[in-house]
Length: 336
Image 1 (cartoon, one colour):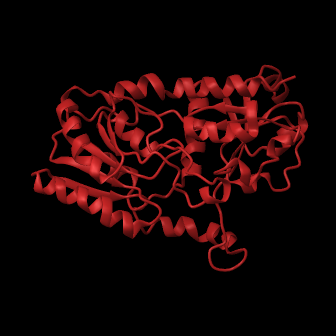
Image 2 (cartoon, one colour):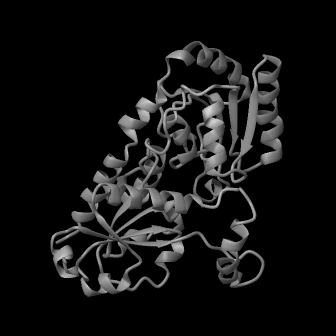
Image 3 (cartoon, one colour):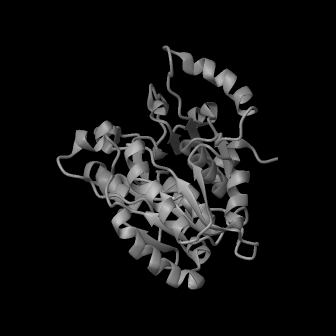
């Protein structure tokens, strides 16, 4: 049996530390009560049970394990025993509160939405690299964290999300509603007009809203759908739309071009460039800026629909193998 010391010496182990999204909801410290009741509550509904933090972390871990690495999660004793061995810190920023281990660290993905929420973060000598997802997000963080930033993505499992193009289709457009801010206004000015336009044109549609479905339901809807319309202000990666692409479901995406999180006004006098489909190409589908641009994009999309191959894009640009390769290259470079 290989000892811990031998595993560490052979660089076979990756030490990850993860802290899920938690926030007091009603009264101070009620997040601890939420930990206890959440498993029971999850048994009573079919909504999404994982946050974006959970999904990104689990995809990182799966990619590493699939590539043959031994992953230890939240193993403080092992990290403390080998203080020169690197660690990865992933998830909600609270993981950094009182962080006491001396190990060289690679931070991310997740953590902060904007680098100015923690402008001095990378001045800590232990924190060597910071993983950033979308190209637009990388440019945002690089302005503050400089060369410490590394572009990375969570790999999409194309064995789990299989080609659904051969399934019988009874939905022309699956509308994925992930509008997060100014919902009433955007529903009236974007979602409802799109739905009415498609219905008047004779298309069968089905709408799902972010957080109000589970993976089983989503996969079955993708199997029934010829295409998807993705409505979201911006994404740092966009796992859900990429699962659709992996299923070979082309996408017509609303891409307004800017970061619409209300936070932007705290850090900039002008709008910050962003994208709702940061990993995308012509073989995946089309984009449109607003409803006035929708009809033009729809016409182009329909003309190209039969020849689109989004699954190919995912295999070539979002593979789990390359995701693990990028992470491990940066992780083990921290060993002095």
